[in-house]
Image (cartoon, rainbow, N blue to C red; front, side):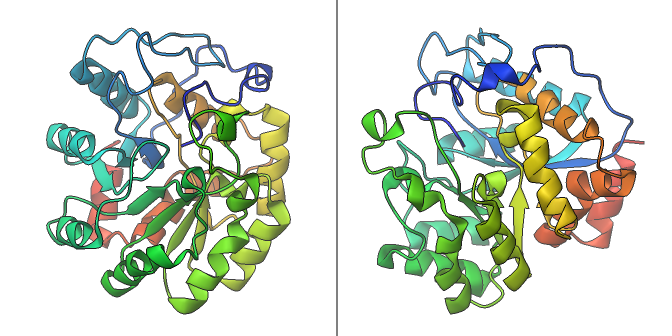
Length: 316
């Protein structure tokens, strides 16, 4: 999640050139590791425009906004999506589309993390599958903050995958929604002490640690259970900048650790735009695209052979 109360990366998003119809790729299953279950008025009414397309969402209810997102997921063959947000919204989305939606425990600019005991029960009941998106940076927290230790312990003990916001936020974030936000807290290397304390902990470094490229490569090199998702990078920063960053990760040998994520918040068209960022990348091979769209996430989530077969059958 890369948005406080203003549009995503104002000033650079319009440079991407994505304000066009996005073609639907040939059928192949996609897992979206970075979706949000938000109310239609989560960012106020009227909703802010998508800063890339200029489109203003005109949903009149939570249901219509949710259905528009589901329709877009179906159009682009997204067979699973990790959707984080306020618990009531996550429950609503899961109830409406339990086959696709995987619940994520969320904390962000306005939402505190649920108590450990509450989360433990939610994971035990299958209501949640991922501990994240954890927007710790927005709350001025390093992953190694003492109050987070019980959460990492829960994830390690229950083998729950974790997803942590890294990188940047909106221009002016500390002066707007989040006075404790600091850019330095987006450094993915801040996760290292947590990884050492909890061997085997699976962590999705959201937004691929951008712009901390060297630090992200170091983390991926040393800790094999660390993966990254591309998040908002594929549609809300200049395409050349995204491709340079993604290619650096691929060239460094991490094609099997990069996962797709749209970071769709209240603009369903962002899903197709994010997918186009991968399908149009000239340096990716077909096998690398498939790995980013599905295979890497299936491995990270530890999907069973039966679940993988179901996902592929769903797009035939």
